[in-house]
Structure formats: C-alpha cells, structure tokens
Length: 517
Image 1 (spheres, rainbow, N blue to C red):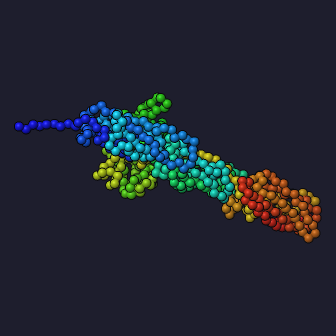
Image 2: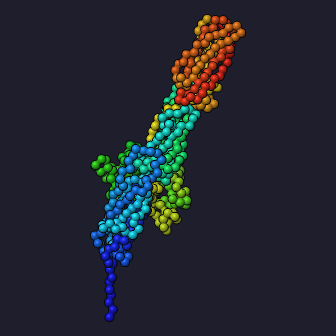
Image 3: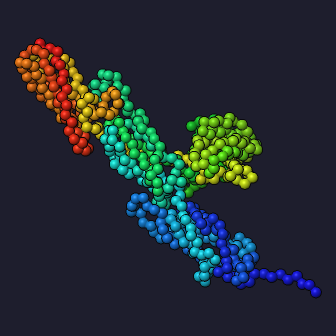
C-alpha cells in the first residue's frame, strides 16, 4: 500500500529564519528600503503559511558619515521607522527608513528577542540628494577679497537631513561671478574704457576636494561688488513645465515641478498640491492640446551606446534635444527611439517636449543598453540618472584694489603741460593697482589706499605742490608757480592694500611742464 504523505514545516525557529534583499546592505537616507524575511522551522524548512509572526528591527549607528567640518547639528537617536507585512509563502516584507548617513548594525529579532540567521547585518546608509537649503558656503572669498589674489570659497554640500553629500551625489558645481558695481574715473571715460559692470567676469565649474567639500576658489581682477551664484547639478529627477497650449509660450505655463521618474498618465494622475489642496493636473491643462517640457541632464552607468525610448498615446507627439542633437517632432505612438553613445557617470544635456492632440495622454521615458538591462529590455530611467539644476546660494563679496602700482597709475590735467605764473593750477593723480583690465587700466584705489606727494624743480626755482586726498582713489595736486620757465614735476606715490599690509612701494614719476608763462 502506498500513501501520498504531505510533510509541512514544523514550529517556527528564528535562528534558522533567513533574510534577503538590498535593504540588508545599503539604503538612502530618508528613503524606504526593503528586505524579505523567510520564516523557517528548526530543520531549515521554509514555512508556507501565515503564523502571525512579528519581527523587531533595530538599527544601531556604529560610525557616522565623516564630517568635513564641525557643525552644531545634533546626531539625535537612530531616527528609524519600520513596518512589515505578510506577502505569502511564509515571507514577510520589512520596510524601514533612516535619516542619518553612516554605518549601522541592523538587528532583526523575533518577538522573543532571538535574532534570525545573519543578524546583525551591516548596513550602509548613504546621503540623499543635495538640498540647497541645508548646504553651506563658507570662506573669506564669500565676504571680501583683493584684486589679483586668490579668494578661498568652500561648498559643503548637504542633504535635507544635514548629511554631507559626497561626490557621487553631485555632478557639477557651476559658479559665476558678475561685477555689480565699481567706481570709474575721468581717465577711463577719456580713453573709451568699456565698463565691465553687469558682465559675467568669471565662470567655472567645481574642483572636488573630496568628502562633500567643493573648492570654489576664484581670482578676481576687477575691484568692486560682485554677485556670486553657485549652481549645483544634482541627481533626482527632471524639471517639468506644464502648458495649457501646444505652443509652449510662457503665458501658457501653469505649473513647474520636479519629477523623479517620467512615467505618468495625465488622465488619472498626478496631482498638483498647494498646501492641503490637491488638484489633478488635467484640470489645469485640459485633456488635449496641451504640452509638457522636461529639462535637465542624463547620466549613464556604463561606457556604451544607450537606446532612449519615449512611449506615449496615439495622438501624442514628442521632440528631443540631447547635447545639441535634435530629434524633430514626430509621433511617439507606440514609441519613439534614438541611439545615444554615453560615458559612465558623465552628464549630457537633455530636453524632452511632449504635446497631446487627442486621446488619453500618457508618457514613459525609458532606456536600454547591453549592460544596463537584461536582453536590452527597455526600463524606466531611474531617478539617480536624471539630473536637474538647483541654485544653492547667491552671495555678494566685495573685492578691494591691490596695492598701488606706479606703471598703472596716472596723472591727468592740462596743468601738467602748461601753466601761468602767479595763478593756482591743479591736476589729478589716479592711484591704481596692476589688475583690472590688464594692459589698459588698473583698479582705482579706495580711500586710504595710497599716499601721494609732488614737487616741481628747475635750475632756479622750486614749486611747492599741495596734495589733497579726495577719498576715492584720486588726489588733487595744487601748485602756484611764481616764475616762468620749464620745470620738471615729480610725483611720489606710495601705497598699500586696505585689507592687508602688503608693504610700501615708492616711485618717482617725472612729468615735464613744457612752459610756465
């Protein structure tokens, strides 16, 4: 006699129970991460039924992410939230999130306190995407500097939980310095000097100093007040703009937001939320004859050719611009594809426009490559490969002139060439440094920037010259010659920087007075 006997797993044993999933090794601060617990009996057999088990998950911070600069932020507790649900076949899905980046030990225990197999697990919590609000820009160059000298600036990039964001989470830091104001002179106007005010004087990209520190040093040539704008390109999505028309005019723009993944159906979702009220976007743009534009950057994980695919409804059209390459408007039903050679971890400019003329509007942005997906299957482009611009800070450093530089300093006035005996005459001395517009004029020194003296001589007479500081980098020299003749006028200039004692620099400039009548 033969019997078909069914043997089921025995009593639950936490020491034999196992866990698997990406959440056991790594997670992103503030984001939900998951792993699966497979319940087993004492013989290691997988349980197939729901046993109303409950597991306790505790994360203990062993080593916090290195801090490149001391802050007043408190570490706080473990800052963990977790939940679990039964998903069938004796498996339980655990979801947790942690806000502080660092190395953790994750203890997974049954309700009686016994750890499952492999517990505790070593888990690394990585920083989230950069937050403009919580990043810090410091250094003397954020406040003031001296023309021609290096001004030190450091960006400490942080996420919304104040974790310092390392290089992998930032693609590029772009800095521009625009000269907003300076004081010119008669000499500049006389020689037709083009005022650089409101021009972008310096534009450069980051120099990564490591550990979430970015070197934004600069060397200004012009003295004056600057506006320094720091723009960060970060992973996490594309900026989208919604238009109530297909002509994409600014007057038709109704909404701008960041979208993590480009996979949406406007007839069902998403919503536009202001405070506590949410409105379906289709109520803002309509269901047809509307347009959406996504702008930002794409990055790849491998050095190879990618296939970019746009999938949309019948009645939908799309156009692309990728690093200067354009794909003209055409139907994206059932899909529109283009090949794109990419380099690992390098960003390319990306712009996608979509317009819906009719039908139930939807659009998915996907890609595929030999290494990215199995069998070159198209998948939604992950948020970490979509990048957007975010302005971190705008600051206003004041750049002061350097020390006086004789070859760039000038004396101007008709009385340098001719004068009348018995009458008072004046000329202007402009004390300048060697920077500014190189080869033309230097920066005019400010109050207290230099000391000027002068006197006139010939074989028979000496002229006393009185010099008054005009407190703006210029000096008025006055003299009254008693006798006619030809004189040599000497102007002595000594100067030092207003901000630092850079030493004195003396010179004599001999100016020939052609004749005194």
